[in-house]
Length: 138
Image 1 (cartoon, rainbow, N blue to C red):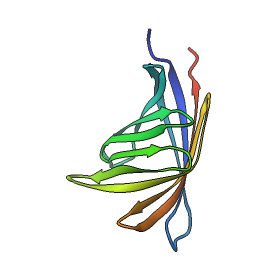
Image 2 (tube, one colour):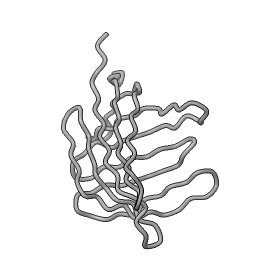
Image 3 (tube, rainbow, N blue to C red):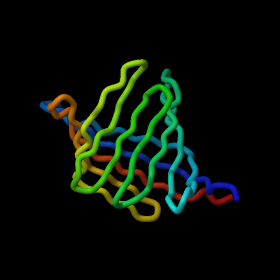
């Protein structure tokens, strides 16, 4: 069976220390796949002048992650009210990040997470990410 095709809307709000908040929007086409009873959202981020980034989101309310490969290498694990180790890389350099999940919500068609990223004991920023998706009807 072919994976359902979906339209993806992504909204992120990034607040770096002592900086104004930045809001970013992305629209993409993707698909939902199921592996071992878990649902995953797959889509590509295509930004002008940048290499394509392949993004995978594990859709779960208690144990989720975002993994990006391509122009950026990143793996951010999320668990409500918990801290976990993630990674971020751009080119050959990869650094560990502490991912502090503030809230995590997953319902059919909507994934939302609020988290902080820390590196070497410093807060890099606070992030709010909301992904909505709907099946494409033929």
